[in-house]
Length: 174
Image (cartoon, helix red, strand yellow):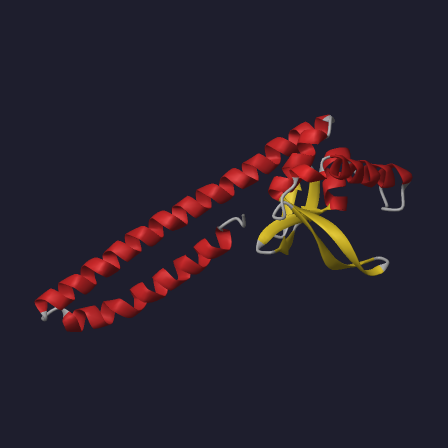
């Protein structure tokens, strides 16, 4: 995921520690809207408001919910605070705007979809593993099926490796 569409606003998503994250500025856009160019006072005020929300409740955020990353900005490379989708949702819980209310629902929808995808991958992995194990056992017992198993084994191993890789990428960090 490289972007998150929220209403008519496109939020840029970055990867941090294998998780989709939003910068503090992107969260400010989601919760309070953007007043035009980032130098505009209304937007600067929104960024400060999100910073205050975070600072006021920083003890409620885990290491997987927020962190600092080096990013290229208009002012050069800087450390920027990012929030996982769970962290962004928590900020949305503290904000008292109508946009925040809508954002909370949107983030939960994205998180639910990630869980569904993970469950689907897990089920497919289990089916493939069962097929692999069954055919391997049959080939070993029968002897006759050994040549057939040698042809079936590589694609099943490749599928298991691919699914395991996808599952690893979709697991949330805790």
